[in-house]
Length: 118
Length: 112
Image 1: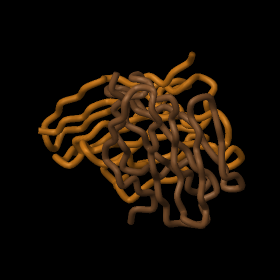
Image 2: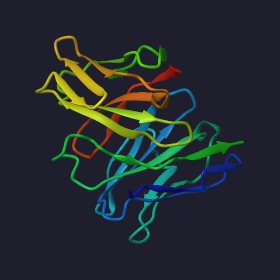
Image 3: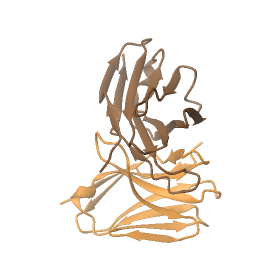
Image 4: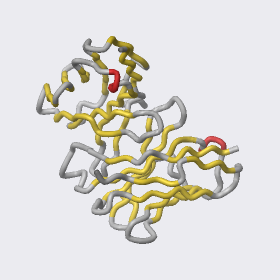
């Protein structure tokens, strides 16, 4: 079964450093997402991306965050200057169909990147 | 602002018995509800969904019940198996971009 692939599985960085989290969504999917889960808390939406532009972003997704689809397969999340509170598990997700037409929300998630900011 | 709430952080049941996981929501405009399952070191995986026009949806051992008047849904797993041990999230789509609002999750442990 096709799957969403995320690398690295663990990332340790110093506060203030830039990190790039990488994702390879399922190949024919058109809609892409980043979510995160701080330890012990709920999974939170960060951003949705379609047709090479952000379609929605949350309050968490401030100017320190950016997303890019640099080629036909990769989808990246960049945090410019990491803070301690950015430590979390970051999940990439994708879906084939327009989520507006199929309300099932059947997103396919990757296994996540555990980001630790020291 | 907790639009989706799972008030039980954990649940332990015996293998073969029924597991019932609960979820409450605040917005009566939500029109679709989903359950995701998450194993450690993996991402959430879709389990089952229900439209607001239905009150029950069944898929094998998994059944989701929706009570719109109470703004409550529940996931029943019967019979429960040790492999069902995972964190279960209730989620609702919000808007048309695929954004999901998740509950806090309930950790289910099924004991052999």
